[in-house]
Image (cartoon, rainbow, N blue to C red; front, side, top):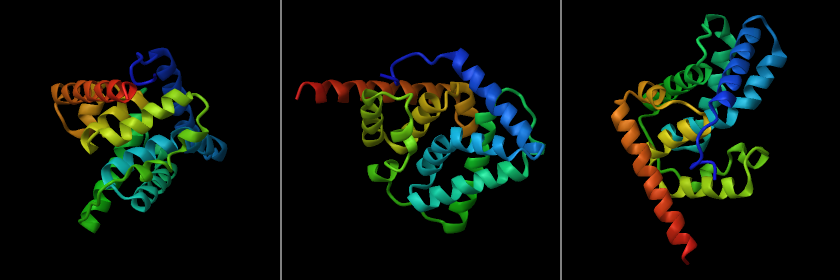
Length: 192
C-alpha cells in the first residue's frame, strides 16, 4: 500500500528535475512543456486546493488559476530542486485569497475528492486507490493536507511545515497520528 511504503527519493528527485525543466521551458514559451507540467501536477494541485477550500468548484478555479500564474510567471521561478513546493505555494496563496474574498468554507464530502484524476493514474494499484478512498473518508482536513502533501506530492516534512506554517514537530505528530488512525481503521475494516 502506497501510504505505508517509504518514498523512493530517487524517483522524487527525477520528478523534481523533470518539473524544473518543464518550468524552465515554459519560461521560454514551450507550450508542450506547459501541457506536461499540467498533466503531471494537476491532480496534486487540485487535491491540495480542495483540502483548503472545501468546495469542488472553488478548488477547480484555484487549480486553474494556479496554472495561469505558473504560465505567466514561469520566468520568475528559480530552480532550486523544489518545484512542487513552489507550485503548492502558488496554489496556497490563490486559495487563501479566494477564502478572503468569499469568507466561507463548506464541509468537504468524499464525493468532492472523486474528481481527482487517480482513476487514470496507472502507477496506483487498485489497493492503493482503496487506501486513498479510506484516507479521504477518515482523516480531518488538516491531517489530510499533510498526508496528501507527503504521500502524493512526495514533499519532505520540513517542506510541509514551511508551506503550512507549522512547526516540523506538529507536522510529524499529525502525520504519525494519521497513520495510526488509518492503520486502526484498515484493521477494523479487515476484521468485519
